[in-house]
Amino acid sequence: MSIRAICHYPDPVLTKKAQPVAEINDQIRTLVDDMVETMYAAPGVGLAAPQIGVLERVVVIDCGSKEQPELIRAINPEILEARGESNEEEGCLSVPGYYSCVKRSAWVRARYQTPEGEWVEREADGLLAVAFQHEIDHLDGHLFVDRLSSLKKSIFRKKYQRILEQQQEQL
Ligand code: NI
Image 1 (cartoon, rainbow, N blue to C red):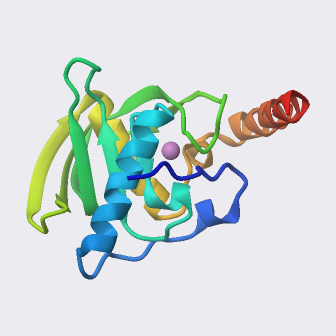
Image 2: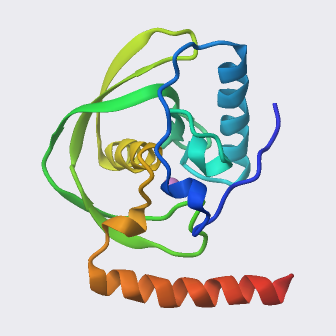
Image 3: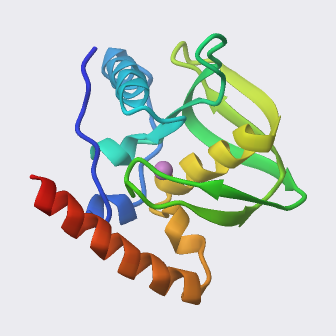
């Protein structure tokens, strides 16, 4: 397993659509293992393959606690059904230092393949429902900041510019 470099906004790879995984082989399982290690090292609660520059439909999520991890390794994930509304604060490893509330569904039913190739269905609410939507968005080339109102987007651009400048100064 190895930790991969995380791509940051405005890297164009983050705007591209990821391809379905046709065959779950050792290469895909290594990708999943690397993503898990990269997510925990960051640390983050979710990571999608495009965030490490790989345009395949793979995400990893862990909304559990340190004492009780709840790792989800999802290949070809999709939302089958969504209900309700939520407006939770989100962040993203590809948009370091910026957080904002995003309108999403409060409950989802998702399905995905495990690294063993089995299809599983799972219902989720709360943080996990948000994580599924956020990570699957990455597979379609969307970031959480794309879902902000135009006013919030312009605030984001200014704030993020300052965050980038501060990071440059620290180098
Ligand atoms: Ni993200």
